[in-house]
Length: 327
Image 1 (cartoon, rainbow, N blue to C red):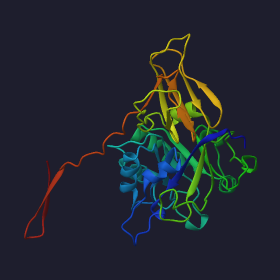
Image 2: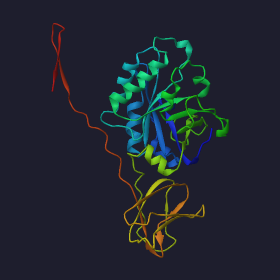
Image 3: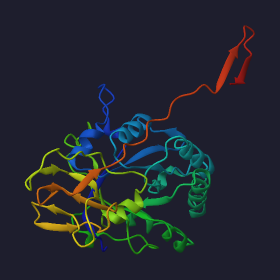
Image 4: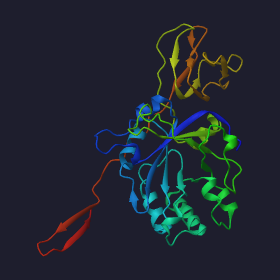
């Protein structure tokens, strides 16, 4: 597999990253501080919503981490029902990325909905009900054992591929795809450092540069970063994440620059005042030019979580009857 890894990486999590015997939950602020640029959160399987989904979804959003979500497809339940459960979760708080259909269930499960046309129904229903982009998670070892009549159909959707190796050349792409958007490359023992309670955590690399990333997770800006209110060429700003840089007090002939000091690389910002440049770095970013502030590093805060509202009132009578009254 050819894979253009430019340092953009993230994790996928589920209830298995939480220890139910402790009051702690996943610390997405710590995950972001580790250097994660995105997170993909398990929504559910079969007819079950992941027991940590709601808190994970809300807390990741509050931390400003771009979010995707996945549903583990279960052939024992109709794809229509699974798609409805999946998409209902995002009516008030949609993902910044896409919804992923996880196809890797064991053959021992059996079920009435194992045929590839049922997976297609799951995809089409998820798109129809949510209006959101959809992708497919799978691995070649699982995919090549399936009898599929329309590989071209599935190949139209972005691929999130599992291949546990350090060399992308050793990852085989499932039939129907020529590239992967995201590569799940392993489960390193860095869970505690990345803010979860499990020792291991699924690690993922993004295929592409920052512009590609913002096309995929385009609804979310990078975290808010405020430059220090001082002058001098040596004043610097810590940006161990994606940042959004805006040029001001600049002209086409004298464009502001953002230098990655540690890497020794200069990024030329777009020349017109008011344009934006997206960069990803683990280095220090110099926001000064000739002793004056030349660029602005900023972002928009993530939207607030949805508020609860009363939708129904239930009356229970002494004869055991129940009325449900809309409010």
